[in-house]
Structures are given as C-alpha cells and as structure tokens.
Image (cartoon, rainbow, N blue to C red; front, side):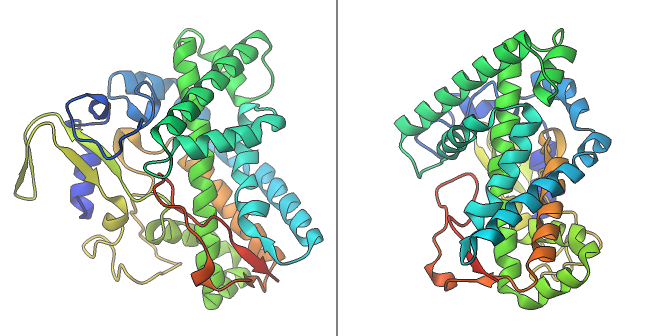
Length: 350
C-alpha cells in the first residue's frame, strides 16, 4: 500500500495483524528472525493494549519535554569534543550516534560501559538481509539476556531512572518477562532509528546550503523542519502486517493470510495528502506524515525522538554555521538490508 489513506487504513484496522507475522504459514520478507513475538512491536490487542497502557504514562508530553535541557547538554558536550578534535570529523561517530544512545541509556539507567555492546547487538538484530540468520539470532539472544539481568538488578536495587520507576510502579501490572520485553524494545528501537534519522537529516541540510543557513539564522523553524525531514527522508520506509481475513482496499481484494506492506515513505509523498509533495518545505504548516506510524502501534518514543532531533540539529546549526561535507556524496556508504536506513559515515569540516 502506497497511498496515504490506504496506509492509514492498514495501520488502523485491527484486521491487519502484527502478531500473525510469526505464524509458520504466512509470507516472510526475511529468512531470519524478524524480532521477538512477545515484543511490544509485535503484539496485537488486547495484550498490546495492556502493555502499552502500563508504560505509556512514563512518556507523557510533560515528562518528555522535561528532558530537553538534558539532551541539549549532551549535544553541546559532544560538539565540544568534536570541535576540539579538529576537522574533518565523522559526524555519525562523533555526534549522530552517541547523542541518542547517551539519552536513552541514561534514561533507562544502562551503565555507560555497556553502551557499545548494546549498539552492536541492536545493529545486528535489526538486520533484514545484511546479516546472517545465525548472527541475528545471537544478537537477539544477547539483547534478551542482557535485559533479563538489567531488570533483575533494578528490581534488587532501584535507582533514579525510568526502568526502575516502571519496575516499582508497575510491578502488579507487568511480569518480569514483559518488563524485559518492553525495556528491550523501547531502548533498542529507540536509539537505532534516531541515530539514523539524525544522520540523514544532517546530510540533507549540509548538502542544501540555503536550507542550512536559513535554519541557522532562525532556529525557531527547526521543529517544523524536523517534521518535513521525517516526511521526506525517513530512516524507516514501511511496516508489515498480515490480513487475518479477506478485506478490500481500493477496489482490490486482499485474501486472508496475505502480507501487506504499509509503505509509509510513499504515503508521505502522496499528492492527495501533501501539496507539492516532492518539494521540501521546511515551513510546511500541515504535515500529517506517517513516519512514526498511526493507530495502536504509533511510536511510543516519538516524543523523545522529536526532542533529540530538534535539540541535536539546533545545537549543530548554532555551533557550526559553515558545516560542510568533507567527501564527495558519491563516496559515502549507506546502510542497506536493515530496518533503519542511513549513512555509515558522514565526513564533515567547518
């Protein structure tokens, strides 16, 4: 499905199931594992509804907005180190990767010594075709085992972090296994997508000097610009569902058991939903993009991602008004065969 209305229908209608992706008799888009069946991403109501309700109170807008000052501080510190090291520098390694990882890991109380391992496991676990089945399975197992231990540690000795709060406040609502699933899903999915979205956004702006300079001069435009970058250059291009019964969309009959790809990246450029959809308008007033999804599975961490993208780009624009690529765009390598798309590296100078 590529049209905006049709994609919304697939994302909203309970006849299209995530849980059915794990049935043995349905089409698959990968030979390897496609995540964990008990993950918040892969459950259907009522299990999904119960788990999401239990944790969503921790992501209310007021709490998320209270994180902005901390995100800005982390961003400034990373840019301090990048500037001190001199150019050229790899913006992905120096800034786009450590910013979301630092934010989400600190939020969940993950020790800094474990951040590199988590990044490596997550990068492998979110492979579609880039890694072998054995590698993906090992990474998923490592992530699961890590969060089993982390949840146990937090239950034994709670501290001032979100995971400890969830364990303490929701102990009657979520089992340990469910807490492990929720924590792993939010943390792993949360930083991998934001890392790549921040890198893609920086790449687009650096390659378009007029856009970059305009936002540098008027940083108040950054929130709207982030939404347009999410619409036009999303790190994730779509999501899969299985039709649990015969259903008709756009005059076409979809038989029960069929896989349906809700191609959000295409829907984001539907001329019926967006005037001049191929034009990047950083001041677009109405931006009903589907990059964070829609319906029951709307991205739980969308608010945090928006804060990170806004604060990260504002810090970058403020600190480096003359930032530019230090390599020919044709020389850059890009992630392929992965859930999240983005550049492997982004050499810049200033």
